[in-house]
Image (tube, rainbow, N blue to C red):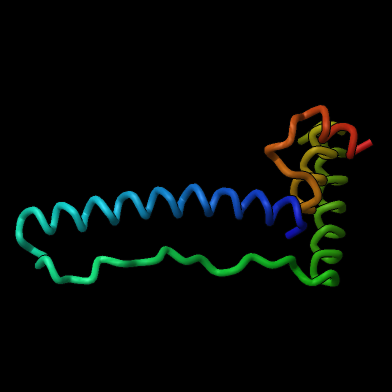
Amino acid sequence: MGLPAIKRFQRRQEVFRALLTAVEERVLEEAMKVGRLGPRVNRRFAVQFEELSPAPAGAMADVVGRLTDALAVAAEHGWVNEEEARRLWWRYQGQVDESAPQAAVGEVAE
């Protein structure tokens, strides 16, 4: 993954972490209310995810090369148009943050 993709997934992890924390806190509260947990039970917890890291450069180059070939074939057969092929190429090679405005994506691709 490129840095923009890593940042995007880190943001998603933080949203998911907040959601899981809220759910777990609610479950613990309800368990205490109905007597399933005693007052002295340790209710501390942490939601952890594996650290995201970029793919090795060689592996990334191989994947991008195969993707480029596949998109060229798809464009030749009319399965995708040139603009769609360009957008997919930038998206999957991990250099464009999908949450960025579309105008910024076009600028990078040109």
